[in-house]
Image 1 (cartoon, chains in turn blue, green):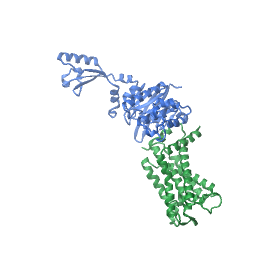
Image 2 (cartoon, chains in turn blue, purple):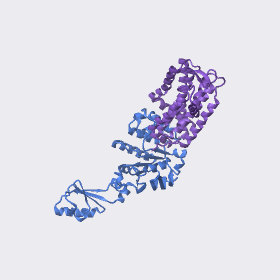
Image 3 (tube, each protein chain N blue to C red):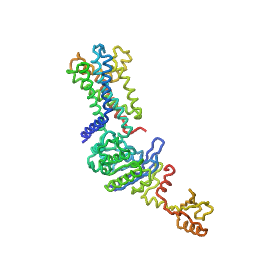
Image 4 (cartoon, each protein chain N blue to C red):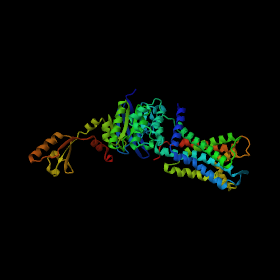
Length: 300
Length: 256
């Protein structure tokens, strides 16, 4: 058995003149949570739907659980779970009935009680789907995706539209899946989500992977530190090491790859002139900054 | 495994249907309204259709039975499957190991069950309220016609979904394709001496043949088992064409 759940080389997909995915490589290890992050239209969903078997690639090698998803085989679908970008569930069945229906599609389903428990819908078991809130429907959607006890679960923007508390709840649930030994491949708009959940993050932009690694590696690749302090003057008044500072809301903000020298000069300069450097802060660049830098303006 | 999956699918379709009592109620009420309405207006007239005399209620009970099958199979199937497709429910199912035919079978069998129930109700009301003879010797022909018609109109409804771009357009398109036919196929109005072109248009489509075959089975003078082989052949041809088109062009994905 390969240690890779997903192996993609040179995947390409175009819609007419539009290049949705421009030749990407992906390697998702078994048992990890892998996040594909990028702005709308970057190619996340197209990539996911090719891996799920919903679409065909124009070019490239795609192996998911050592199978070719484009062959659309029932034996393949028995091993994966899919949660699509938009939730769509028959409205007139209850939570239990819906999960039972999906359990019936698989040879070795997870027990009903466990599924209800994993997604935290115990109190709504007998409710009709149409009476559930949007967040509850999304959780039911995940239970349907897990019904067959899949080796690999695809989650396309699992928390888009959630309030902060619901997102934390969803994260707990997704971490729980990992502890069950599942491989999870998810897409998201949110770097904090990728950071909180993923073992590996790939940033996709205009159909290309622009960065990939663990959250720490991604941050290490961008060795910038952000130094800022309250300052009313202009760049001309600052020492040379701080000449590149920008000014936002009455603060000077300096991004530097050499914080030691910058701070040394800055504090020396401040002491000499009796400046207090009020509100001085020194922070490593956040993953969000890395992402926004790489994903470009579309991500904002 | 697959067969039991398909049967369970029928169960889920049925349960979903009855969980929306308002929709279910009006599905059953509409043919009855037409039955009462048309019988009140034309029920007492003596009609001559295709050279054969029959009274109004013998015309309308099988005619409205045909309407019931068309609305449960063609209209409902066309609309509801398009709506499910647009919502993404079909795509969701397509990502599971459920074989596509098993899902379609669930919807088809459900539509046929609703049709059957509707026909029983229409026939029952016809017999009680209007004294319409219920076929005895022609029951085999009646049943076969009914089943063939139901399958054919389901196949045509599924084929139609391929040309319906989105759920909002579904009611307009399904109605526009079926309402005119109801008027020229001896369902709503007995066409005693139609212009040749109108008769021709009616003859091309399956609804007139379906209604005629049911009306023959209901006619007290009909001898034998009530099979109208010519009409059944036309209906079957449409069924085969509808199935071929549905298999070729049916889409599980919402249109963008």
